[in-house]
Image (cartoon, rainbow, N blue to C red):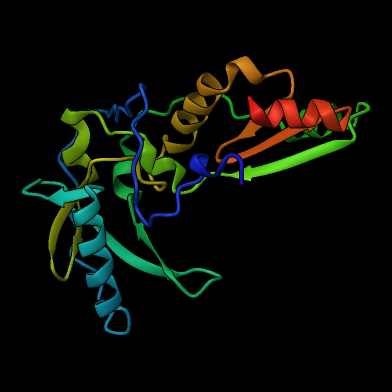
Length: 201
C-alpha cells in the first residue's frame, strides 16, 4: 500500500496540533461530584484508565474539579470513556465559531463531482492538547481516583468548534477539493486521475 505510513495502526498514538484548547469560564467555585457507581464496567474502566495513562492522554490529578465518568459500549463492543461535564459546561463561555452547514455541503458535492473518498480520523479530538492552565478543569473522578486530560475530550462544551478550527487550518490548502465536518473528511473530484492527485496531497 503506497500510503501505508499515513495510517496509524497503534491503539493510542498521539499527534500534537499547533492549536491548544482553552477553557474560558465565568467566575465560579470548582464543581465537584462523586463517582458514579458502575459495578458492571468497573474492571473495563480500570483497564482503559491504565491505557490512557500509559499513552499520556491523562495524568493523575489533585484538582478541585471532579466530573463523574462512565463507560459507554461502542458498536464494536469496545468501550468509550464519557465524562459528564454538565456542571463545567454550564460555567464555560461559549465559543460561537460556526460549524459547516450541512445543506451547503450537500449542495457543493452535487455540482458535477463523480469521485468521492471519505476519511474518518482516528481519535481525532485526542490530537489536540489542552492549555496547561486549563487541564485541572478537565478532571474526572472514578472509583480508582481523580485524573485530568492532557488532550481534548469530546464532552467539553467547546470541543467541536476547537476541533473544527484545527481541521480547517490543517486542510486549508485543500479546500477546493476537500470538505471537513469535525473528524469526517470528504475528498471530491471530477475525474479519477484528479481524485488520485487530490488524495495524494
